Every structure is written in C-alpha cells, then in structure tokens.
View 1 (cartoon, each protein chain N blue to C red):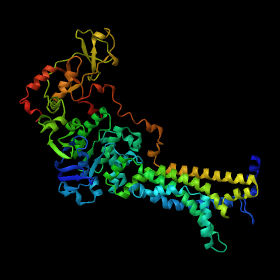
View 2: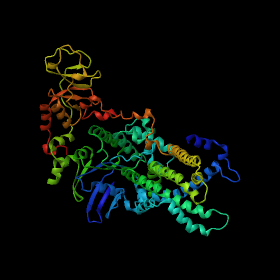
View 3: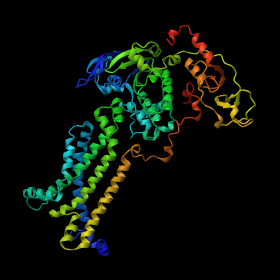
View 4: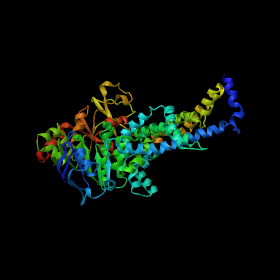
Length: 366
Length: 260
C-alpha cells in the first residue's frame, strides 16, 4: 500500500505542482493517475520514490515513512518504468534487466538467470539477451524496461507513461500483456498516463487530477464513466462514455446463429447471400467476401477479403459484442471462442436487447 | 628533393646516436617522453575535473576558461616561462627548460580533454540518467557505471585530439635547447639542410598518426558495442517481433494478447 498524506510539492518560484494530496494506492491493485498536462501526476509519482522530494506531507510505503531511509535504498525496493524506457545503451539486454540485483549484490550468475526468466515473461525471445538496446524497437525496449523494474521482485511498481511513446498497435498489445502479467504478479502499481482510455483500461481505480495538483475524483473506472463528480471530470473523461462503459459489463453467453463459411484457398461455392465469411483451416475467421464482386468458382485469396470486422469473444464484454456487429460489413457480428475459432454470428439488435435487458441501466458496470 | 629526403631517412647513421649527435631513435624517445608526461598530467587534471563538472553541472565556467587558454601562442608562452623559470636552475641540468615545456604542453592538452569529457557526460540521454537514479544508484554509481561508459567515445576523441596537438607541438622543446624530433626541424632550418628538416616534419606526422591509430584500437576495445553500434550483422534483424500480423486488423479486441 502506498499512502499520500497531505503531500505537497511547492517550487521556490511559488508554483504548486501537487497540493496537499491525500491518496491511497491499495496493495496488489493498479492505481492510475490521470489528468491534463501540468496537473502534477508525474510529480506525484516521482515523490513516491523521491526522485522529487515533497516540500511537506508524508508518503507512506505500508508502515514506513519513505523519508526515513536513504533515497537510493528506497528506490531499490520500488520498480520504476519510464516513458522512453531509459535502458543503458552500453549494457546488454540481460545486464540491463539485472541492474538492481547487481546493485544489491546478488550473485551475477543468479541475477542473469533471473533476468533470462523475466525476458521470456515479458514476451521477448531469449536471443535478445546478448543484444544492446540500440538494436531493439521502441516496443521491445519498453518490455525490457518492465522486466528491469521487476528484476528484484519489488512489491511496488511505479510506471510513468510507459506506453505513450510506442505506436497504437504495439501500445494495445503492451497494455494487454501488462494486465496479464499483473494478474500473475499482483504488484501494487501506480501508473501515470495522460490518456483517459488507457487509464480506464488498466486501472483498478483511477485518480483524476486537475491543474494545480488537486485530486478531482478517485473512483473505479466504471464509476468514473457513469458518475463523474463535476464538469471538469466529465469533460476530461470525454465522449462515448456510455459506449465505453459497456466495456465493463460481461455479455454473458451470446446466443449465436451458425454462419456459413468458406476456407481460404478453396473455391467459392455458389451462395445466395451477398456476404460470406472466410476462415483458415483451424476455423479462425479471416475476413468477409463480397460475393457479388467475385467470379463464381474462383479461389479464395487474401486480397479479396474485407477485414473491417472486429471479433467478439464468447464470455467477453458487451462493448466487444456490439462493436463486432457494428464493424462487420455484413451486419453480422462474429463470435469466437477463447482460442479464436468461430462459434457463430449475432446481430446488433440482439446485443442491444441484451443491453436493454440489464437489471438496472444506471448501474452499468458498477 | 623527395629523393634527398628519402636518402636522409634511409641513412642508418642518422638513426643511431654517436658521442656528438643524438640520432632519430634517441630524439624519438625524448619526443615521446615529453609528450607522454604532458598527456598524463593533463589527463590526471582534466578527466576527473571534467567528470565532476559534467555530473554536477557545477562550475561550468572552468570549461570556458580552459578553452580561452587555447588562444595563447605556445612558442611565446614557452619563451616567457623559460625566462621566468630557467634562472632558478643551475648546473648540468635541463630542468629549467623541461618544466616550461611541460607546462605549455599540458595547457595545450587540457582544454580538449576537459571540454569533451564534460560534453560527453552532459550528453548522456536524460531518460538514461533518470532511470539510473530511479533504479537506486547513488551519485557516484551513476557517474561511473552509466555516465562515464556512455561518455567514453567523446572522452576518447578529446584525448586523441590532445595527443595530436601535443605530439605536433612538442617540437618546440627543441626551440629552447631540448631534444625531440623538433631538433631535426630547427637544425635543418639553421643549416639550410632541407632534407633533414622535412624528414623531421615527416617523422612527427608519422608518430602522430601511429599513436592515433593505437588510441583508436584502444577505443575500439574499451567502448561498449552497444554505443558504437558495431554489432554483429546477424543480430540486426531484431525488429520482426512486433511487425503486425496482416490479419490483426480483424483481431483487435480480445485475441491479440494471446499472440505473445
């Protein structure tokens, strides 16, 4: 648990970056600090490991006052991930990951063995171990940054906009893997972002800060979407709140219809419908074929596919189910199982019926 | 003329010392000795000072001051120092001339080592320094484990240019009666023996190039491959892992995470 107790940061020129912040980040949960630039979110985060010293107030790490020990000892107990990863260019990947164990005097061989485990854990090939940061892409470097923060197995992790410098596809992937990792590890995490979507996706609770370093609202993401406390929070949380809130509600078991399919590489069957779903030999949907465009009896090729439709997972969220229907060119939303194989299709009307049938519309996601 | 220079250099009697004359080997040794002493002293002063200034960002005026010293004319300063210092030494010793020479050479070497060291440390990526402190390194650990290794290429280039300058300028030792390869240049000039003079110049240039080559080799084996970018070709194709699968456009919401 991390607790801010009246923590304040005032600079000599009188600027107040963080103003008497009271906040508790519970153990084993992800607390996201979010807000516009200048709201003091990064300052608050950096006060925890004393990269910035608070002017007044106390920050508690469980029952320890963080000011009661030398800063470098405090920092070795706290994982720290920053925006551009900040890997050491002169060290190999494995030695980058083992930075903290080396510092605290862990046996070198043991530290490297642990680093190799972490490398795989964050989804990188062990062949990367002997490479240097300059040889890795931004997303790969950021994974190494996460592995480095985990190396000494600290109970607490601080993450300062770790995914904001990578492209959206990789960011999405990193976020998903981060959540999966957190499921296994259960660290106490404080995460800073300026991206409200990221905050809502990752946070167990979200703290919205306003300019001047004041806490505007602290709430679980679903509550933040359904009940912003004031106009500032409502404005910051943004549009599409109702739609995004569906991301917190399970769709339950979606009733599906069988969907006729054709396997990639086979010839087009005669079919009366105008859209036909193409699947690969394992049964994973690949995209839609517009039969009116294609010569009868032709072989199904990649270039013929319309790939606009997203896939809903059986047991996933209402948002995923509705989006699958809305994005599908045929209007039929594709539902797949956990391993990505086709189950069947549903329609927006049926998903809407599910949404309207929720016990209490006001408690969506609560 | 070129032939004359070649025959001067290939004459074995010019290489060996006699009772009356110091040969090329002897002067080469003296030249190296003056240069090495100056470079070591300059390194001992400028390297720690540069690391400290770069790390703390304090007293940066020292760098400007050191650079201003570059404007001093070496020969003029040498003559001035000899006039001041030499009278304090009597008898069969050349100390009164060696000390002024070394002072001039040290002053010549310090600015490039100092300013390159400071620049090298200051240029370390902010995120890298931030991460080093954030991981729990102490100030000295950040300096020696992170900043210095990353500053090494610039420190080396400063030391190499200082070496070139010192080797070239050490010829002026001969201007104040001392030995060194400058002897052939000044003697050749005085005796209008141009092959000797040109040979002296060539020897200095060759010495400077050889030393630079040796330092380049040392640099190659000291600086991390991660900084120089000299990495094995097989390792370079490391960017494939995140090339998006062409199919992932369909698989956005729930399936992508399983890919890892």
